[in-house]
Picture (spheres, rainbow, N blue to C red):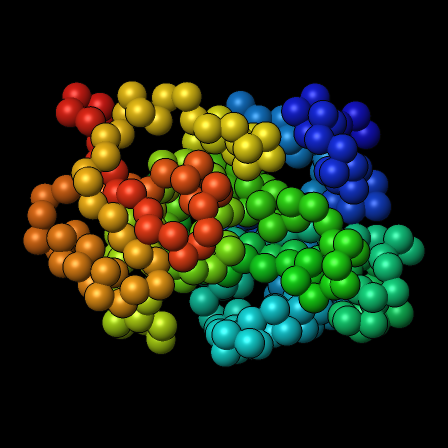
Length: 296
């Protein structure tokens, strides 16, 4: 397989060769995407994905392996996904995708971790779940994780989590993506790079973790490469202006104050992905609004 020029320039992504590691799509037949990847001019994923049907009994080992690393990845936060939630809320209504490694190329650490059955040729190493919502052209990102968090330092696959979500959004032609994360989670640095990052809730008491951030992004693939290049968006200041509001990610009262403003003011508030990337996760963040005249 010939890789794309953009990804080829990033040496740390040489694991994405399309031979030993390939993307997978794990959806029931009725949920398969018609014209996958047609919405975006992006050639990051030229390799043919594996297709797995979760309604076939012989594919259950693939699901078992996904749930093993998902449970371990979220065990400390006590947010592991129950098996019935995976089926009822992800497989049946939504779209499940990720990357898988050929068993013959899988490191021992991964095989020991996931315990694939002898007949399983491919071993999943990441997971992204998106579910369509009642909102027009809107999906919700329900789950994103990978084996990277469970492997010894230096044994993971650079950018695996970011590329897993990117593949899912690209393949499913997602225009608007909502999601949830915690303010001081390292995942914030990842999620803010898929498009303009709007804050829907700053403090969310209906969630098990009230200091949860609910976000919405209009998917923009031109932002994706900056996750790897660490460049700032040269057009950010043309589209957004600083409100003078600062939010402290680890301060409950600060989050509540911002939440009240979201509820009471007829404004849409945004974060700057470049600032989140450069700062400590607990440093105050500037809040932005769209400049007058910039389309919503």
